[in-house]
Image (cartoon, rainbow, N blue to C red; front, top):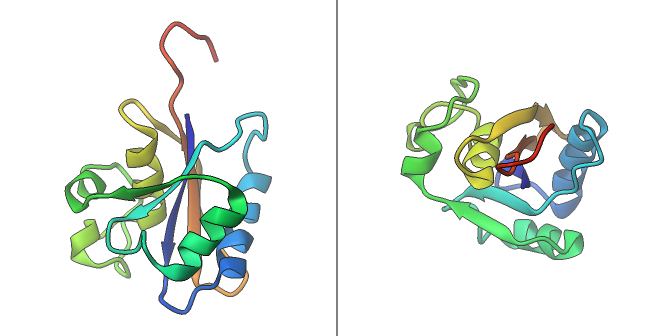
Length: 129
């Protein structure tokens, strides 16, 4: 399972989200196609995020606060306490990918600096990398 996680400001557009994702995908192994987009529970219903998800034809995972706070993501003073003061993009990607997930691409920033994106992957049991 490969999940792109996102953190974004209220002014972010679908184009901002796409910019961050394209930057992240350029740094990833493109053989792992994405299975979902993830963000915090309180951002998952943002109209531009939903529009972007529809354009990508991917489901949205709304990650609860407690799951975000448990992730080993980069510390960030700009991220509110409700997200654990850690990269929301990385935390959402790791939580969305599930137990044993590994961060494949650390947070990347969109061209307009309104969005961060990261990619995490879980390798299914009984397979080899």
